[in-house]
Image (tube, rainbow, N blue to C red; front, side, top):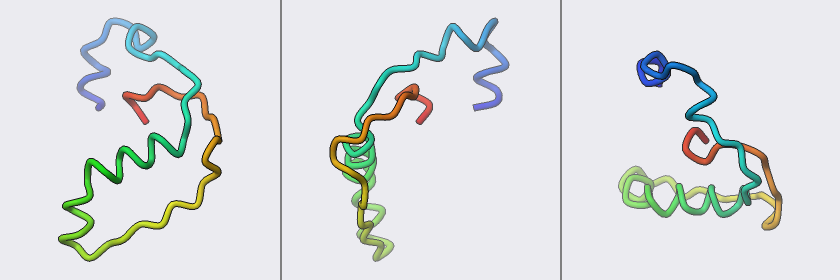
Length: 61
């Protein structure tokens, strides 16, 4: 990440804050990595309000 930021002329060009549903982002990350969780015998439990909204850049989250 540091090298990527260093290549940008300004950090603001690559940072776009949006209102995003936290549960959906967590669920997607778990789904994308489920084979790693299963192989490592890790079974995450998500305890987040389903409609909780956060302001962040999805790419950097």
